[in-house]
Image (tube, helix red, strand yellow):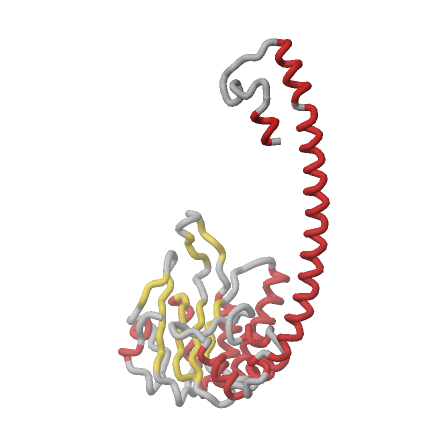
Amino acid sequence: MGEDMQTSPFASALGTSYIPSMSEIDIIRTHIERPIGECDDLQKQIDDAQSKLDALIAQRDEVQSYVQSHKALTSLGRRLPGDVLAEIFLQCLPTEHNPACHVDEPPLLFGRVCRSWREVSMSTPRLWAAIHIVVPRVTSPKVYSHLIRARCAGIRAWLTRSGGLPLSISLVLGPERFYVPRSNCWNPAPPKTDFKTFFSVLMDFSRRWKILKLAVADDIVPSLSSVVDTPLLETLKLLELNDRYYQPSTSLLQRNTVINFSRVHPDCVTSL
């Protein structure tokens, strides 16, 4: 084809703004008939080659999958002793905050990998000695009621797995409604009764509380008056909620003198 390009009767006009006459147009059309046919033949060869390539790629992928599935049986992770694996899991926990109660984050994430990982994670109390709880937003009453029950059951199971270890717990519950700056509107938040529902679960473990962090509306604080049996509690952190945002407060205990933790020093009442 390269030779034909050089010997084209219109070689000097190619790539220019030359305007051919009607007779020259007929000559051009006749001249490119063979190259057009050659182009079609080449495209057919390309399509055939692509089909063969696709078949080879599929065959390669199948063999590769077969090999990888067998290599997985020889991986080091399968041979790690349970105590070593447990220590690795512990190093994966967040250090800046308590682990969230979410299946896509550790420690719950470990149980989704394989049966052996689940067995190790479930039998390692230190993985479950801290938890961050966020009361879900209000949805339809039926769905929300089911969600609350499921969340409470999950929290109880989580804390039970911690054995007898001291606990670090953080709980966030918004006011009756909260402001979302970006949307410039108010969104509904969980009712106060849900705080009591969640807190009643935590109360069953109060003797093991070591660190307790609460972000709750100011008028919910009196609900804490029933908490009296907290022999291990060292730190209580409260975060007051007003209508628009979370605001650190050191006056909750002074305004609501209903919490009588003998080991809680006023300096410990800081922002969450």
